[in-house]
Every structure is written in C-alpha cells, then in structure tokens.
Image (cartoon, rainbow, N blue to C red; front, side, top):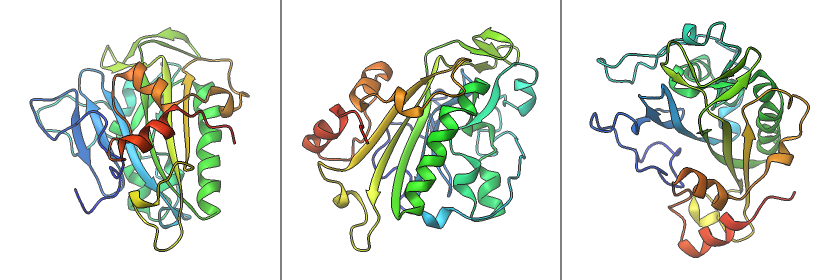
Length: 253
C-alpha cells in the first residue's frame, strides 16, 4: 500500500495477498510488511522502515499470538509450538524497533514475525546487529531492513531440529538480514536519496549454538550472494546500475 513505507525498495518474492499463493502470502501492516509461508509456518521475509519516529519507551508486550491478518481457514502457529524446543521465538522486526506505542510494540509479537532461532544467535550476533541498527537511527539515519531465514535445520540448546510444533514450523539453517542506511536529512526522502556510496549491510548468520560472543560483522556478505542463495531479487525498485554497484559490495565499516 502506498501509505506504508515498508516496501520502498521492492517486494523481493512478488508476494501477493492471494489465497492461491499460501507460501508467498503478503501481509502489510502499519508497522511492517511480510511474506508468509504457510507450509513452513514462518515468514519468507519481513521488511520494515526504522527511523526515530518508531523508537520510544513503550514496554515490551510479550504477547506472542497468531497473526489476525492470516486467512481464517488456515491453521496457525502459536507460541506453544516453540515450547521446550531449545529454540527461541526469534523476532525479525525487534520489539525495541517498535517502541513508540504499546500497540506498535505488540505488533511485533505476532507469530508471522517470529522464526526459530538458536539462543546463541538470537541473544548474540543477531541482537548485536539490532542494537547497532538502532544506534545508527539515534545518529540521525533512516534504515530500511529486510530479514528472513534460509535453508533447513538448525541447532538449538537441545540439539539439531528441522521442524518444531509437530512439524508445523520449519527451523532455518541460517538467518539473513539486509540493512540499507539512508542519510535521513530533510528533503532527501525516498529512493532519490540512494547513491553509489549508500551503505548496505548484509549478513547471513548460522542458526546454531557456539556463536553467542561472535561479532555480527564476521558474517557480512554481499546482497548478490544472498540473492543467489535465495533465488530472489532485493532492492528491485532501484535503477539496475545502482543495484549492481550496491549489491556486489560487502560492507566494511
């Protein structure tokens, strides 16, 4: 929808709100957009804008629940499907990225925004990149972020699993994220503000134990490498020459 900014850079899987595409089902909310995969019980990706308007002191709601925007007839994932699995209910849009109101914070606890994450990733490098992203925002940047999982089978605190919740929920082999860092100065809003020097951070972090103290920077890759692995097209709303420059670069800052 034109009123929401979360798909500014494109819709990487051409997801639609179409019952005939249950494994690439588009949900657009005020707070974020996502492509849901019914077979896997997790999102293919979640995409969101992050600037100072979204940050604040709203308390963490912790109200994990099925997404009311899913079609009524579909079986839903609940927080209980993760119980005792050894995997965290890992947010893609972090709770703290939506601290401006209780309602916006609560929105991040729908299960369509949640993926099974190894505790060492979720509380380690994944969380460190989330915190780093908010520090950039507090320095005046505006971010556009897209994140998801890739592959099948991860290792949590109770060993390796490929599915949780009696098969309902796929455990990805790794988690990936792309962060586009825009200089959020007045008058340079939107895609016109992107240039060949725009910083784009991309990471792919293995969904396993033993990485609690790892630095997220050690997992940086190019957007091109992610596209090849996933078979999707990121940043597709940018001119192709600009995509070419930004997507082959690995962030070094």
